[in-house]
Length: 380
Image (tube, rainbow, N blue to C red; front, top):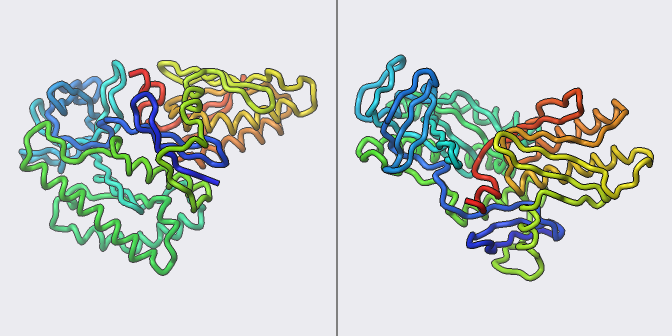
Protein backbone atom coordinates (compact mmCIF):
# COMPACT_ATOMS: atom_id res chain seq x y z
CA UNK A 1 0.00 0.00 0.00
CA UNK A 2 1.34 3.42 -0.96
CA UNK A 3 0.04 6.97 -0.63
CA UNK A 4 1.21 10.46 -1.47
CA UNK A 5 0.31 12.80 1.37
CA UNK A 6 0.04 16.57 1.01
CA UNK A 7 0.40 18.20 4.42
CA UNK A 8 2.00 21.08 6.30
CA UNK A 9 4.95 21.44 8.65
CA UNK A 10 6.19 24.67 10.22
CA UNK A 11 4.47 26.76 7.57
CA UNK A 12 5.72 24.70 4.62
CA UNK A 13 3.56 22.67 2.30
CA UNK A 14 4.96 19.14 2.41
CA UNK A 15 4.67 16.34 -0.13
CA UNK A 16 5.51 12.92 1.23
CA UNK A 17 5.18 9.33 0.08
CA UNK A 18 4.38 6.45 2.41
CA UNK A 19 4.83 2.78 1.63
CA UNK A 20 3.31 0.28 4.06
CA UNK A 21 2.80 3.12 6.58
CA UNK A 22 6.48 4.09 6.46
CA UNK A 23 7.75 7.47 5.28
CA UNK A 24 10.00 6.94 2.24
CA UNK A 25 9.96 10.25 0.38
CA UNK A 26 9.76 13.85 1.54
CA UNK A 27 9.97 17.27 -0.11
CA UNK A 28 9.09 20.76 1.06
CA UNK A 29 7.47 23.24 -1.30
CA UNK A 30 9.58 26.39 -0.99
CA UNK A 31 10.88 29.43 -2.81
CA UNK A 32 14.18 28.68 -4.47
CA UNK A 33 16.26 29.87 -7.43
CA UNK A 34 17.37 26.31 -8.18
CA UNK A 35 16.82 25.52 -11.86
CA UNK A 36 15.78 29.08 -12.67
CA UNK A 37 17.35 30.77 -15.70
CA UNK A 38 18.34 34.43 -15.38
CA UNK A 39 19.88 37.04 -17.63
CA UNK A 40 22.87 37.92 -15.43
CA UNK A 41 25.48 40.66 -15.50
CA UNK A 42 29.16 39.93 -14.93
CA UNK A 43 30.20 41.79 -11.79
CA UNK A 44 33.79 40.67 -11.37
CA UNK A 45 36.21 38.18 -12.94
CA UNK A 46 38.66 36.31 -10.72
CA UNK A 47 41.18 34.63 -13.00
CA UNK A 48 43.01 32.72 -10.25
CA UNK A 49 39.68 31.07 -9.33
CA UNK A 50 38.84 30.62 -13.02
CA UNK A 51 35.40 32.06 -12.25
CA UNK A 52 33.20 35.07 -12.90
CA UNK A 53 31.01 36.52 -10.16
CA UNK A 54 27.66 37.58 -11.55
CA UNK A 55 24.58 39.41 -10.34
CA UNK A 56 21.28 37.74 -11.15
CA UNK A 57 19.20 40.15 -9.10
CA UNK A 58 19.71 43.48 -7.35
CA UNK A 59 20.87 41.71 -4.19
CA UNK A 60 21.77 38.25 -5.50
CA UNK A 61 25.31 37.31 -6.43
CA UNK A 62 26.56 33.95 -7.65
CA UNK A 63 29.51 32.60 -9.55
CA UNK A 64 30.04 30.68 -12.77
CA UNK A 65 33.22 28.80 -13.71
CA UNK A 66 34.67 30.40 -16.84
CA UNK A 67 34.70 26.99 -18.55
CA UNK A 68 30.93 26.81 -18.01
CA UNK A 69 30.21 29.79 -20.30
CA UNK A 70 28.92 28.92 -23.77
CA UNK A 71 29.08 31.42 -26.67
CA UNK A 72 25.34 31.28 -27.39
CA UNK A 73 24.49 32.41 -23.85
CA UNK A 74 26.50 35.64 -24.04
CA UNK A 75 23.89 38.23 -24.97
CA UNK A 76 24.34 41.60 -26.69
CA UNK A 77 27.70 41.14 -28.40
CA UNK A 78 29.49 38.76 -30.72
CA UNK A 79 31.22 36.07 -28.68
CA UNK A 80 33.14 33.26 -30.29
CA UNK A 81 35.04 30.23 -29.06
CA UNK A 82 38.25 31.46 -27.42
CA UNK A 83 36.87 34.92 -26.60
CA UNK A 84 37.09 36.04 -22.99
CA UNK A 85 34.18 37.17 -20.91
CA UNK A 86 34.30 40.79 -19.74
CA UNK A 87 32.99 42.74 -16.77
CA UNK A 88 29.53 44.07 -17.61
CA UNK A 89 28.70 41.29 -20.08
CA UNK A 90 25.15 39.92 -20.01
CA UNK A 91 25.03 36.13 -19.79
CA UNK A 92 22.10 33.73 -19.68
CA UNK A 93 22.73 31.36 -16.76
CA UNK A 94 20.89 28.67 -14.83
CA UNK A 95 21.13 28.32 -11.06
CA UNK A 96 22.83 24.96 -10.45
CA UNK A 97 23.24 25.21 -6.67
CA UNK A 98 21.32 27.52 -4.34
CA UNK A 99 23.18 29.96 -2.10
CA UNK A 100 23.54 28.52 1.40
CA UNK A 101 24.70 30.59 4.36
CA UNK A 102 28.02 32.14 3.26
CA UNK A 103 28.26 30.08 0.06
CA UNK A 104 27.18 31.87 -3.09
CA UNK A 105 24.93 30.27 -5.70
CA UNK A 106 26.67 28.36 -8.49
CA UNK A 107 25.43 29.00 -12.02
CA UNK A 108 26.07 27.49 -15.43
CA UNK A 109 25.33 28.29 -19.06
CA UNK A 110 24.85 24.58 -19.82
CA UNK A 111 21.11 25.18 -19.60
CA UNK A 112 19.02 22.07 -18.89
CA UNK A 113 15.32 21.74 -19.59
CA UNK A 114 13.33 18.69 -18.50
CA UNK A 115 10.41 17.07 -20.27
CA UNK A 116 8.39 14.06 -19.25
CA UNK A 117 10.76 11.57 -20.85
CA UNK A 118 14.00 13.47 -21.37
CA UNK A 119 16.38 16.21 -20.32
CA UNK A 120 17.92 18.39 -23.05
CA UNK A 121 21.10 20.26 -22.13
CA UNK A 122 22.71 23.05 -24.13
CA UNK A 123 26.36 22.46 -25.03
CA UNK A 124 26.42 18.77 -24.18
CA UNK A 125 27.03 16.09 -26.79
CA UNK A 126 25.49 12.73 -27.48
CA UNK A 127 22.75 10.62 -25.93
CA UNK A 128 22.55 8.97 -22.53
CA UNK A 129 19.92 7.46 -20.26
CA UNK A 130 19.19 7.19 -16.56
CA UNK A 131 21.53 4.83 -14.69
CA UNK A 132 18.54 3.61 -12.70
CA UNK A 133 17.30 1.70 -15.74
CA UNK A 134 18.38 -1.86 -16.44
CA UNK A 135 21.28 -2.15 -18.93
CA UNK A 136 18.91 -3.71 -21.49
CA UNK A 137 16.38 -0.89 -21.21
CA UNK A 138 19.09 1.80 -21.24
CA UNK A 139 20.60 0.39 -24.41
CA UNK A 140 17.20 0.19 -26.10
CA UNK A 141 16.32 3.79 -25.24
CA UNK A 142 19.75 5.14 -26.18
CA UNK A 143 19.74 3.27 -29.50
CA UNK A 144 16.23 4.52 -30.27
CA UNK A 145 17.25 8.15 -29.77
CA UNK A 146 20.67 7.79 -31.40
CA UNK A 147 19.11 6.72 -34.68
CA UNK A 148 17.28 10.09 -34.78
CA UNK A 149 19.86 12.26 -32.98
CA UNK A 150 21.50 13.75 -36.08
CA UNK A 151 18.11 14.42 -37.65
CA UNK A 152 16.97 16.11 -34.46
CA UNK A 153 20.02 18.38 -34.47
CA UNK A 154 19.57 19.10 -38.17
CA UNK A 155 16.04 20.29 -37.41
CA UNK A 156 17.59 23.18 -35.48
CA UNK A 157 20.33 23.81 -38.05
CA UNK A 158 19.31 27.41 -38.69
CA UNK A 159 18.42 28.18 -35.09
CA UNK A 160 20.37 29.41 -32.10
CA UNK A 161 20.69 25.85 -30.73
CA UNK A 162 22.98 24.90 -33.59
CA UNK A 163 25.81 27.08 -32.29
CA UNK A 164 26.57 25.05 -29.15
CA UNK A 165 24.46 21.99 -29.90
CA UNK A 166 22.65 19.94 -27.27
CA UNK A 167 22.79 16.58 -25.57
CA UNK A 168 19.95 14.31 -24.47
CA UNK A 169 19.43 12.22 -21.35
CA UNK A 170 16.48 9.83 -21.43
CA UNK A 171 14.66 9.80 -18.09
CA UNK A 172 13.50 6.79 -16.08
CA UNK A 173 9.88 7.63 -16.95
CA UNK A 174 10.55 6.58 -20.57
CA UNK A 175 10.77 2.97 -19.41
CA UNK A 176 6.97 3.02 -19.04
CA UNK A 177 6.51 3.46 -22.80
CA UNK A 178 5.61 0.42 -24.87
CA UNK A 179 7.77 -0.37 -27.88
CA UNK A 180 4.91 0.72 -30.13
CA UNK A 181 4.76 4.24 -28.64
CA UNK A 182 8.41 4.55 -27.66
CA UNK A 183 9.75 6.19 -30.79
CA UNK A 184 6.90 8.62 -31.42
CA UNK A 185 6.30 9.75 -27.81
CA UNK A 186 9.97 9.99 -26.84
CA UNK A 187 11.03 11.88 -29.97
CA UNK A 188 8.06 14.23 -29.70
CA UNK A 189 9.07 15.02 -26.13
CA UNK A 190 12.70 15.66 -27.12
CA UNK A 191 11.65 17.98 -29.96
CA UNK A 192 9.25 19.87 -27.68
CA UNK A 193 11.90 20.35 -24.97
CA UNK A 194 14.56 21.45 -27.48
CA UNK A 195 12.09 24.00 -28.88
CA UNK A 196 11.52 25.35 -25.36
CA UNK A 197 15.25 25.68 -24.87
CA UNK A 198 15.62 27.53 -28.18
CA UNK A 199 12.76 29.85 -27.24
CA UNK A 200 14.47 30.69 -23.93
CA UNK A 201 17.66 31.64 -25.78
CA UNK A 202 15.71 33.82 -28.23
CA UNK A 203 13.70 35.56 -25.49
CA UNK A 204 16.87 36.53 -23.64
CA UNK A 205 17.93 38.79 -26.50
CA UNK A 206 15.05 41.20 -25.82
CA UNK A 207 15.10 41.11 -22.02
CA UNK A 208 16.81 43.33 -19.46
CA UNK A 209 19.46 42.06 -17.05
CA UNK A 210 18.21 40.33 -13.89
CA UNK A 211 15.13 39.08 -15.76
CA UNK A 212 14.05 35.57 -14.84
CA UNK A 213 13.59 33.87 -18.22
CA UNK A 214 12.45 30.53 -16.81
CA UNK A 215 11.48 29.76 -13.22
CA UNK A 216 12.52 26.58 -11.38
CA UNK A 217 9.79 24.39 -9.92
CA UNK A 218 10.71 24.30 -6.21
CA UNK A 219 7.57 26.34 -5.43
CA UNK A 220 5.31 24.29 -7.72
CA UNK A 221 3.20 21.88 -5.67
CA UNK A 222 2.26 19.81 -8.73
CA UNK A 223 5.94 19.32 -9.61
CA UNK A 224 6.61 17.93 -6.12
CA UNK A 225 3.62 15.58 -6.43
CA UNK A 226 4.87 14.38 -9.83
CA UNK A 227 8.34 13.66 -8.40
CA UNK A 228 6.81 11.74 -5.50
CA UNK A 229 4.82 9.66 -7.98
CA UNK A 230 7.90 9.02 -10.11
CA UNK A 231 9.77 7.95 -6.98
CA UNK A 232 7.09 5.37 -6.17
CA UNK A 233 7.15 4.08 -9.74
CA UNK A 234 10.91 3.48 -9.56
CA UNK A 235 10.20 1.27 -6.56
CA UNK A 236 7.67 -0.79 -8.49
CA UNK A 237 4.53 0.95 -7.17
CA UNK A 238 2.20 1.84 -10.04
CA UNK A 239 -0.96 2.53 -8.03
CA UNK A 240 -1.17 4.95 -5.13
CA UNK A 241 -3.58 7.39 -3.55
CA UNK A 242 -3.13 11.15 -3.13
CA UNK A 243 -4.37 12.43 0.23
CA UNK A 244 -4.63 16.11 1.16
CA UNK A 245 -4.96 15.31 4.84
CA UNK A 246 -4.92 12.08 6.80
CA UNK A 247 -4.96 10.92 10.38
CA UNK A 248 -3.52 7.58 9.30
CA UNK A 249 0.00 8.99 9.00
CA UNK A 250 1.97 10.83 11.68
CA UNK A 251 3.80 13.18 9.31
CA UNK A 252 4.73 15.83 11.89
CA UNK A 253 6.19 13.26 14.24
CA UNK A 254 8.09 11.60 11.39
CA UNK A 255 9.65 14.93 10.34
CA UNK A 256 10.49 15.75 13.97
CA UNK A 257 12.52 12.53 14.09
CA UNK A 258 14.45 13.57 10.98
CA UNK A 259 15.78 16.61 12.85
CA UNK A 260 17.27 14.41 15.59
CA UNK A 261 20.77 12.98 15.27
CA UNK A 262 19.94 9.59 16.83
CA UNK A 263 18.00 6.96 14.86
CA UNK A 264 17.07 3.61 16.41
CA UNK A 265 17.15 0.38 14.39
CA UNK A 266 14.74 -2.52 14.91
CA UNK A 267 17.63 -4.73 16.00
CA UNK A 268 18.40 -2.43 18.92
CA UNK A 269 21.35 -0.80 17.19
CA UNK A 270 21.29 2.87 16.35
CA UNK A 271 22.74 5.55 14.08
CA UNK A 272 24.27 8.89 14.98
CA UNK A 273 23.96 11.37 12.09
CA UNK A 274 25.95 14.61 12.14
CA UNK A 275 25.59 17.27 9.43
CA UNK A 276 28.85 19.21 9.41
CA UNK A 277 29.97 22.15 7.30
CA UNK A 278 32.16 20.17 4.91
CA UNK A 279 30.78 16.61 5.16
CA UNK A 280 28.18 14.37 6.79
CA UNK A 281 29.20 11.73 9.32
CA UNK A 282 27.12 8.65 10.18
CA UNK A 283 28.14 6.28 12.97
CA UNK A 284 26.62 2.80 13.34
CA UNK A 285 26.42 1.41 16.88
CA UNK A 286 25.34 -1.99 18.22
CA UNK A 287 23.33 -0.38 21.05
CA UNK A 288 20.91 -2.94 22.45
CA UNK A 289 21.68 -5.51 19.76
CA UNK A 290 23.06 -8.76 21.19
CA UNK A 291 26.86 -8.64 21.29
CA UNK A 292 28.83 -11.80 20.72
CA UNK A 293 26.13 -13.45 18.64
CA UNK A 294 27.49 -14.91 15.42
CA UNK A 295 27.09 -12.55 12.46
CA UNK A 296 25.41 -9.90 14.67
CA UNK A 297 27.73 -7.14 13.43
CA UNK A 298 27.03 -8.09 9.82
CA UNK A 299 23.26 -8.23 10.39
CA UNK A 300 23.20 -4.84 12.14
CA UNK A 301 25.37 -3.30 9.41
CA UNK A 302 23.09 -4.57 6.65
CA UNK A 303 20.02 -3.23 8.47
CA UNK A 304 21.85 0.04 9.12
CA UNK A 305 22.76 0.43 5.43
CA UNK A 306 19.08 0.31 4.42
CA UNK A 307 18.11 2.84 7.08
CA UNK A 308 21.07 5.10 6.28
CA UNK A 309 19.95 5.48 2.67
CA UNK A 310 16.40 6.21 3.82
CA UNK A 311 17.73 8.90 6.16
CA UNK A 312 20.00 10.38 3.48
CA UNK A 313 17.05 10.61 1.12
CA UNK A 314 14.57 12.07 3.63
CA UNK A 315 17.08 14.54 5.13
CA UNK A 316 18.44 15.31 1.64
CA UNK A 317 22.06 15.03 2.69
CA UNK A 318 24.59 15.82 -0.02
CA UNK A 319 28.28 16.17 -0.71
CA UNK A 320 30.66 13.84 1.11
CA UNK A 321 29.05 11.24 3.38
CA UNK A 322 31.27 9.14 5.66
CA UNK A 323 29.76 6.03 7.28
CA UNK A 324 31.49 4.27 10.15
CA UNK A 325 29.96 0.79 10.18
CA UNK A 326 30.53 -1.70 13.00
CA UNK A 327 33.91 -3.41 12.57
CA UNK A 328 33.79 -6.85 10.97
CA UNK A 329 36.62 -9.38 10.77
CA UNK A 330 35.36 -11.31 7.76
CA UNK A 331 36.56 -9.88 4.44
CA UNK A 332 33.66 -11.71 2.79
CA UNK A 333 31.14 -9.90 4.99
CA UNK A 334 32.84 -6.56 4.27
CA UNK A 335 32.55 -7.21 0.54
CA UNK A 336 28.87 -8.20 0.88
CA UNK A 337 28.17 -4.98 2.76
CA UNK A 338 29.97 -2.87 0.12
CA UNK A 339 28.06 -4.62 -2.68
CA UNK A 340 24.80 -3.91 -0.85
CA UNK A 341 25.70 -0.24 -0.44
CA UNK A 342 26.52 0.01 -4.16
CA UNK A 343 23.09 -1.44 -5.03
CA UNK A 344 21.40 1.07 -2.73
CA UNK A 345 23.32 3.91 -4.44
CA UNK A 346 21.88 2.93 -7.82
CA UNK A 347 18.31 3.03 -6.49
CA UNK A 348 18.50 6.60 -5.21
CA UNK A 349 16.58 9.32 -7.11
CA UNK A 350 19.52 11.73 -6.60
CA UNK A 351 22.84 10.51 -8.02
CA UNK A 352 24.78 8.84 -5.20
CA UNK A 353 28.18 7.24 -5.70
CA UNK A 354 30.17 4.70 -3.67
CA UNK A 355 33.75 5.99 -3.57
CA UNK A 356 35.72 3.63 -1.36
CA UNK A 357 36.05 1.87 1.96
CA UNK A 358 39.12 3.00 3.88
CA UNK A 359 41.58 0.87 5.80
CA UNK A 360 39.73 1.89 8.97
CA UNK A 361 36.46 0.60 7.55
CA UNK A 362 34.91 4.00 6.76
CA UNK A 363 32.63 3.90 3.71
CA UNK A 364 32.86 7.04 1.58
CA UNK A 365 29.92 8.21 -0.53
CA UNK A 366 29.17 11.34 -2.51
CA UNK A 367 25.66 12.57 -3.29
CA UNK A 368 24.79 15.32 -5.74
CA UNK A 369 23.61 18.62 -4.32
CA UNK A 370 20.16 19.31 -5.72
CA UNK A 371 18.85 21.76 -3.12
CA UNK A 372 19.06 22.63 0.57
CA UNK A 373 18.88 19.82 3.10
CA UNK A 374 15.79 19.44 5.28
CA UNK A 375 17.67 20.87 8.24
CA UNK A 376 18.85 23.90 6.22
CA UNK A 377 15.34 24.62 5.00
CA UNK A 378 13.78 24.41 8.46
CA UNK A 379 16.49 26.40 10.23
CA UNK A 380 16.88 29.11 7.56
